[in-house]
Image 1 (spheres, helix red, strand yellow):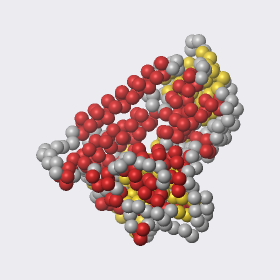
Image 2 (cartoon, helix red, strand yellow; image 1 turned 60 degrees about the horizontal axis):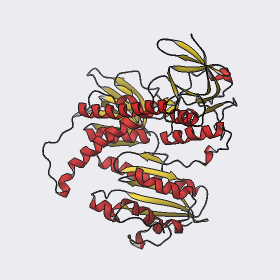
Image 3 (tube, one colour; image 1 turned 180 degrees about the vertical axis):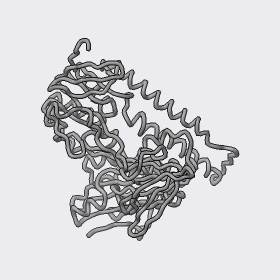
Image 4 (cartoon, one colour; image 1 turned 90 degrees about the horizontal axis):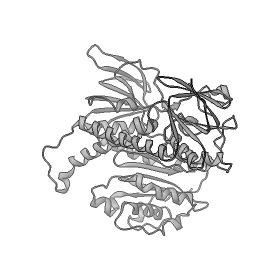
Amino acid sequence: MGEVKTFDVAVMGGGPAGYVAAIRAAQAGMHTVLIERSELGGTCLNRGCIPTKAMLHVAKSLVSMRSLSEIGVKVDGFALDYEQMLRWRDRVVENLRRGLMHLMRSNGVEVVCGEASFVGANELKVISESEESRLRFDRAIIATGSKPRPLPCLPEHDMCLLAEQALFMKRIPKRIAIVGAGAIGVEMAWLFKSLGSDVTLTELMPRVLPTMDGSISRGVEAHLRKFGIDVLTGTNVTFGEPTEEGSFKLHFQRGHEASTGVFEAVVVAIGRIPDTATINAEAVGVELGGDGRVIVDNGLRTTASHIYAIGDVIRGGGFAHQAMAEGELVVEAILGRSIDIGSLLIPACVFIHPEVASVGLTEEELRQQTDSVLVGEFQMRANGRALACNEAEGFVKVVGDGRTGKLVGVHIFSAQAGEIISEATLAIQLGLKLDEFVKLIHPHPTLSEALPESAKMAIGKPLHMPKLTTRLRRR
């Protein structure tokens, strides 16, 4: 087994949460080891965020090319080279993966390849393909992430794929079903429709993107239908079966109505669950929830006082940027500083085109808290830059608390929404009031001008949309 090394901090998992924590711990002067069973970067870099966005970039380029004739650009003979797209995606991932390894070396983080599990209060067992080793630690950080939630009613079959497997299909299916219309499912549906598939998107809840603001859900659903995607909300997939012709048949139930569909591929995108089955949490007194998530307090400490947990492993599905923020905060906690993850304000994005971005409270959430709600919704067709760039679809919506006048939520369905939302996040974090937010001067013409315009509508002082059409709501 060899020498047993001792570290100040052992980080279990090399995804966005884990590698950030390892870097910060090493920068704080702690002898740090990062244990990863597969590739650095975790699901996000290798099978999720980055490869998906690389493919979505190609898809967006294709969609843009198809509409260039509208603005006077004629392009003949363009076509998708799917194999070249996959090579491009893989180069992006490999470049970032190499960069991560360089960051580990330059910060003095020791990287160990293998699967880690607790064997004692301060000891880990690491199993790799070639050997088993032990290491000791003073503090440990569990960052083993999450894994896709399976759909029990579907049999194991090579045409039934999890979302992260669908990215690596060798060819584009002619007909594909996406089960689940959360962020991942909507991105998958938009991606494969752009690449040429006939797409059916199903969702058990009454609307797509069910956790987002109602205006966003309605706007995105209308966009998807207009784009040619068959959207089935309020629909349950009851079971599936391969056909004699080599396809896969899905059975749907919508209310009292049953139906079927035949597809070349079925992608399950119904969420993620914490990946804790192999860490042997009970060996160190780390409590797990019923779904396997690691229980932590607002300081990211588990029920074992010297062990912390961050990222998807404490909530199931989550965002890479949220995990990274926790990776920085957990080191602050280890150093004895007070932290509160409950105060984090986390923006959410969906990278279709137009993009979706949201931060803070939805209108529906605020209405559950107060009867004084201010809403302003500015249509991008009234934005000069959007029209000039042929990007007039969508809107920006702000939600304000009528009691305090504060901006509490911003919801964007627009080109570059993911870039615009950070300003809104900062404004909410700083506690700006709507009448303060509207004073921020934006360069003209830019898409970001829609932010103060929607806020002006919320306070009843619109500039670039008729006052008659403002959605000012007070109750």
